[in-house]
Image (cartoon, rainbow, N blue to C red):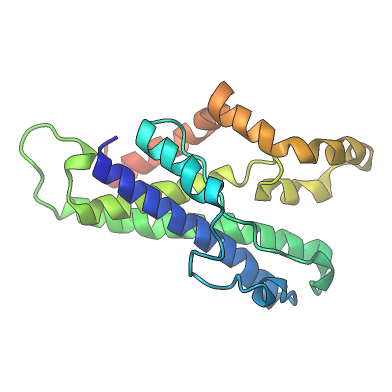
Length: 216
């Protein structure tokens, strides 16, 4: 990947991850839990949210080497017992992060499409990295939000999808589920870096995004 595009992609990824986490906290606060507010996490200032490994080292390696890009921030604290309707509200809090990512993806994709349709293209064949910086920012922001929105809906701890699926699991499955949860992050790393399954799940959505923006 071109260095400029890698840097743009990396910055867009960090911004999207932080907005994802802040949205969890804002929805929890609206539903009665002020834990994130008291912890100083309802801010777009990246410092309180950054996990040195998950927010900087891991995504930088992926963006600069072409490996799958995986990033995470410090999870926003949520106290389920402070929510007004814990069983319902924790689902809303969990859906808020992927939901805002998909909303931002849609806005950025439309803006990128309009930008592409109104730009003077380089003559001959060209790479995405050859396009203007403004377009690269819109395109990268759409892309990272698409990946974050879909990826976080996978039903694997600690992703948001695991919180969504847990209440509908048969009670007989719960003991095994609770034993599995501590190993969820390891399973995620295997899916991303070893099996390639996560990439195959995201590929169809990526192709549709490319088709929408570039019209082909």
